Image (cartoon, rainbow, N blue to C red; front, side):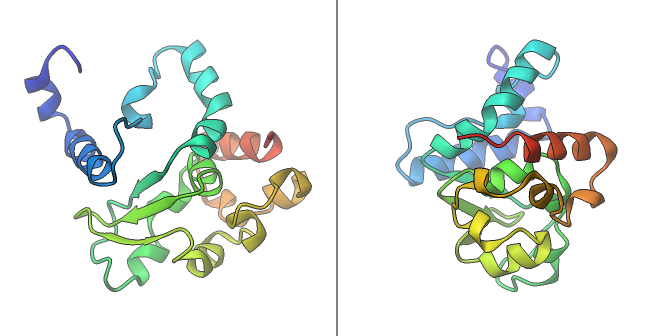
Amino acid sequence: MVGDRKLAERKHGFPKIRRSCAQAQRDGYQYIWIDTCCIDKTSSTELSEAINSMYAWYRDSAGCYVLLADVYNSKKKGHDFFTSRWFTRGWTLQELLAPTRLQFFDRDWKSFGTKFDLIDNISTITKIDLYALTGGDLSWLSVARRISWEFLPSLNDTTRRYGLLFARNIRD
């Protein structure tokens, strides 16, 4: 993508990259890391290393943006949010639990709240304890409790395996 900007601009995900960078700049950040383009998924070694490191990367980040491309009107904060596909993705667990600052955007890149603004709704959707969502020490939660979080069964087999692996291996 670095070598051919015109080609990159025609890619489906390019607007997400552009808007993420613009938001990061508005928030005063000099750098941004975007999982969908910063991990070489064709390299099993790099993918494995990323999977094992992502929780720490999110935890140590200054902030994390979540684009809910299927949420159409952030002002309503209603049904679209509760049924967003984001809550069924395997990466969601670490994106949701690890960062101290998590900001949600609707499909038009309108911010409609932080994890803490929406925490009761998020807990209702995911069945994840408020203790975990507010930055509690996850190592104190049993593996059984972590894998019982209700949204995991809705995942497809690949993302369920990843989510379960993550839930079992949460470390400091």
